[in-house]
Length: 231
Image 1: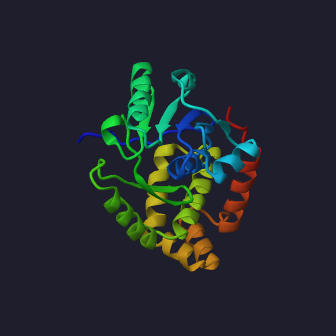
Image 2: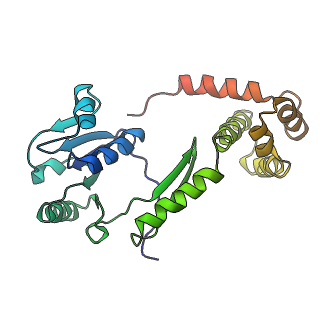
Image 3: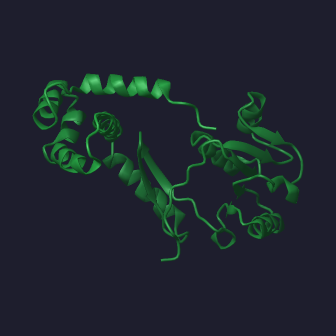
């Protein structure tokens, strides 16, 4: 296996995109969705990039790329159609030991970007190791039809329950049979049906009579509001 699968936390990290066309715009959108601090370097840019820069959501430097643009960057993406420039971006990143992806040129990447299906906290990544992006997109469409929004709600509920049990000083190893039983007894299907009465009955049977769907989700929403921002 050539590639080592990994999920990166880029929240608050500096990421550089070289190239302001449609491909660059897509890369910027994905980085922003993951909480990155994005800088774009390109003499021209799409309306999307221009608007994001005007809103202060990204930094756009409307000029040609310089090697020094990579300073402080955690991750670099090349999204240009200039072969020599792409090679230079790759070489600069390699010399500095940075993560680098050159769009549609796996030979100039030290990581490749999978096709992704997301439903809330569920992330499914599909990779063909750069051999067939078209097939990866096909698989993504298949999985999007299979994994609906109920999976995101299911994980929200499971996460809220896990945090509650941890707050009550339950030993983490004691959680596994609780969660396995909830899964085996059809919690996901009940969430898909949006049947709160049956969800509450299952939670009461497996976890305890004081545990309800609405209560868990309310606690979770309160926890989210009180979380400190990431630096």
